[in-house]
Length: 125
Image 1: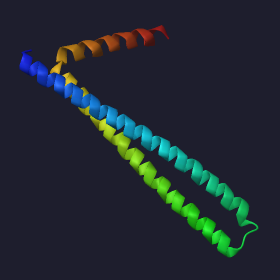
Image 2 (image 1 turned 180 degrees about the horizontal axis):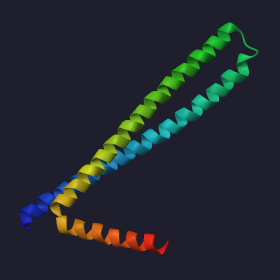
Image 3 (image 1 turned 30 degrees about the vertical axis):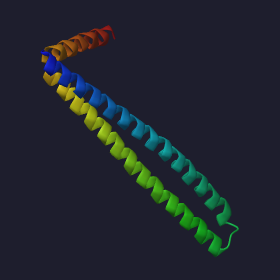
Image 4 (image 1 turned 135 degrees about the vertical axis):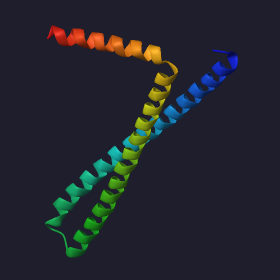
């Protein structure tokens, strides 16, 4: 590989790593927010159930509205998390495809070795 090709390959690797780091951070942030939202929804549901029996119609309506709002926020969070996972999966697929395309013989060797190891492990059972 000449120096120009190596430099562009290295630059591509750095760009892919920084993008991967960004996706991982985004995924972790979305996951943490989603878990917090789910805990809030569960707490609100418990409050709604406890207070529903002895509350007035107005108080029940207020609790129900708050619960529905938090539930739709949580659904939006789930959609964001699903999108982040989809992006992360797409990025991993693209990176794997690019690596296999650039290093076909290494890839064949790795997959052959994995197949041999898997065969040995399955045969032992």
